[in-house]
Image (cartoon, rainbow, N blue to C red):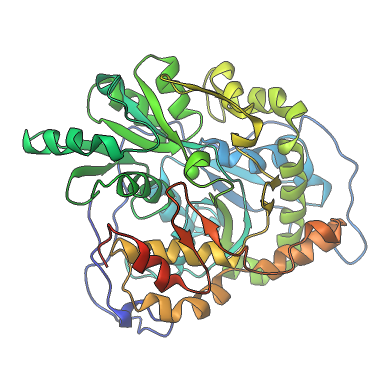
Length: 450
Ligand code: CA
């Protein structure tokens, strides 16, 4: 795993020269991948009546979207399986399983014309890093963020060898435990599925809120989501941060327990996103809106708890997650056996369309800013990023396209946000993020690299 070091302001500027030198690439992460690249061959499980209005006919009927087998991918899979993409004229959508996040990044760089993908599911701020060439060997591949796929549905799993040590949501009583491990030469190993994105941020936030410096006191490593259970079983890691159903499997397999759900750390937090290459979207604006309309209908379908048993059946299929259905169903219903405690609360489950703060699907610019700010916090991006963030976010985040698609779909005005900011966010440790004052947020944090 190659780290990329903090970047100079010049390299991060939109107008940065393509000749900017320096070792800032991030190599794909290896692991034992799940079956990948076969795409979906299933026919839709439902046949919604085609609903292509005059003037809205898509320029093409296909696009290739990548996904990772975690619950974040559900809206794309359901839109394909239940015929929602087809309903809006996208009758030949390809939903393609990616071996890991590095493979998704490599595949979007080459695009579908080169045998890759046009876009798909992303952790943040991957679409920004790809746009700026920061994880693509300096090759800038401009992307558009078009929708949020989900909120919640992620967790931090801990190996059973640390059971009974009161490792939960709040770590303040356990600082000595981490310090003792470190001084004994066996630093706590915590894994995420891709560095410098959501799951890295969640585990860092959790540790730092508990007084543990993730850079100095633990060892962080990258492991593909599908490999986390096997790696924890063979003792390769003490903890990992990833999407359902993998944390739940750890408990089901009696390999570990769940310390915290991301829904406990930040209720209704931003999670993963649909982003597609800018060149594809610019060339196919109607097809882009058709994809969004299909996705939004799928998100509404997924959000209905009456459909979640069927959702588990669909996702469990061999060509999708290839896991036992019962491992998926409980977390989808908000029933979490964390090992040392239980949660039975639908509002803590993965949500796809609406949450306690309003719209899930709408991509708030204020959330993109949090991810960029958190990148600055940990030294992944230079602090000058904040000064340029608005320009960059306005270029990459196309909430305007989401709104246009929502209007074409006939979404009620009350369900279409009127501000690109969701306002002040509050975390479980009382820290607040005011999108108007990202520097004040950074100043309020005790453990940080900036
Ligand atoms: Ca995730």
